[in-house]
Image (cartoon, rainbow, N blue to C red; front, top):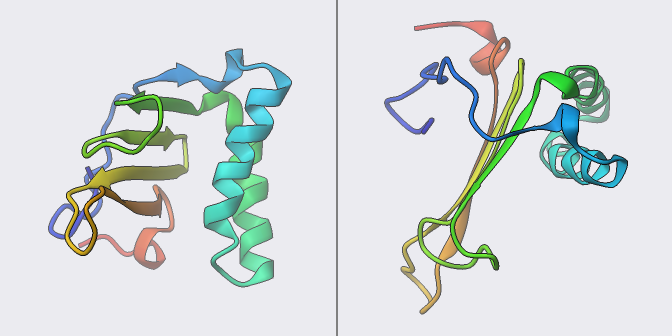
Length: 117
């Protein structure tokens, strides 16, 4: 949903399964997925982002659409919280015969340094 030309276009309604109802193992998997994104920044900021996202976990949802293998064009996973927004989508093949993943991690409050257009 968030792509070039759609900056700050976060949906107003969360869709998916509420993490508040997840088992401990499912919560850990959700945090692991979030951590994979936050570790792309320096250690201090990664820890700051992850701490906030973990504190907001009960207000976060996980949505999934597509095949069970997450391998077909259009398969999508979204983690949507009060601050965190992560979306992974399998896109059309262009250099191989298979779909390939595209993902984005955004923050509802500090995206682009907090500067809105």
